[in-house]
Image (cartoon, rainbow, N blue to C red; front, side, top):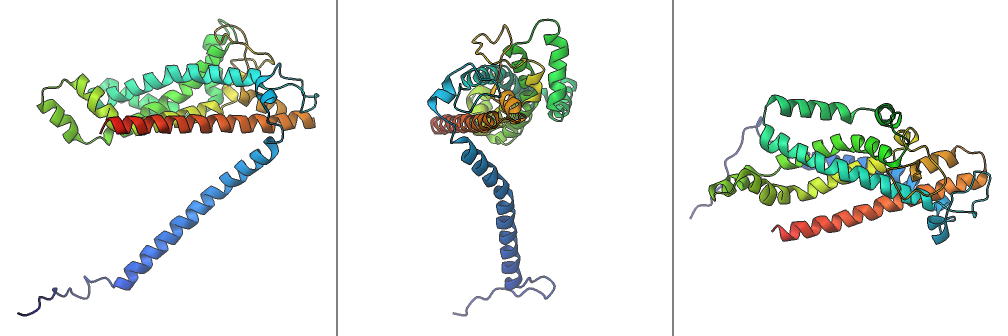
Length: 298
């Protein structure tokens, strides 16, 4: 029986196998080089912060207070009030921005369509994404602080406004990635639109939604400028974020890093390392929650 041979392509249609391999290797090398160029600054930043901050980190440094003056040595006092203030402010901002952002993205993707309101929400979320953080701090200062007072809640409002467009846009993109056949199959079984959204669409996109929320929290947790206009930055703990001035890790980093005293600069490095560790713990926790949601939705 005669062997079956593949049809030969013309000289203009056939691409040499060697050139394809060369292009693939070139692209691989470019991706590896790009990754290295991106990761080098991050490694240097982490190394510098850990090397200079680890020598001051201790349980007493993380929990004690009040925060000492800049002239005090590094081993005096701690940043307990700043840790508490950061947790309060970021938690309040997350509680306001993440639910509103997810609901806004659900409306844009599942209900709004190409309506006027949906286009308006999408336009303003794009505009808010590019607003500088200091402008948001001035905005909250003018509409809230001048009429009421400095407080952790005012800082949470500023951070929430910064987080909201990030959550809306990231969640909207994740919802667009959910295949339409999943929705259509649920509709064919008689499920309502709300039930399909809650039980099918959101579980399918929960990983991306959590990642988007993490990006928003990471942006908010390290912001300093909005807090300088809203919380006033004190040195003692304030367990009530709705009344009275407060403090936070970013504002303490700013106050200590700009000081000429060695003890204050050491406290700034320790505070920066503390902020990085908090963000890392939040990320690991969110990944665990995402993995469990993904397992239960299968």
